[in-house]
Image 1 (cartoon, helix red, strand yellow):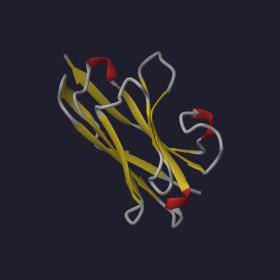
Image 2: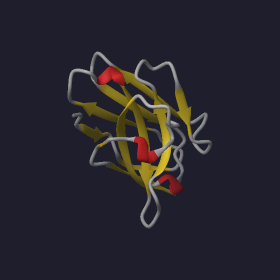
Image 3: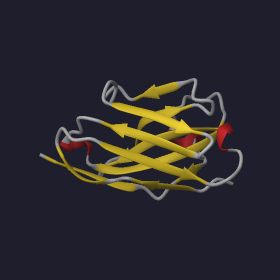
Length: 125
């Protein structure tokens, strides 16, 4: 069982940066792939970025490539999402998620077993 708690959201202006954190409980954090997803009002939850347990595989949604960076610190049981040059249409609740290693694509939302409660990111124009 893994419990996830996100933090770092807030209100920023277009072009600003934010760093989201995801704190995980448990002693086997390194065996879990970690992903970040976001959900805007009235929209489906969408994939943003993911990182494998050892940090050797990283994937991004095309819309965030070059602006967002996912990372993790297994010694601290934490994952991070650095978001630069934020855009107003990226206003959403951002969720971190964890899954035990599987062959399913890391962008596959249904393959994640554990979810945090989300943190609100609001980008004003």
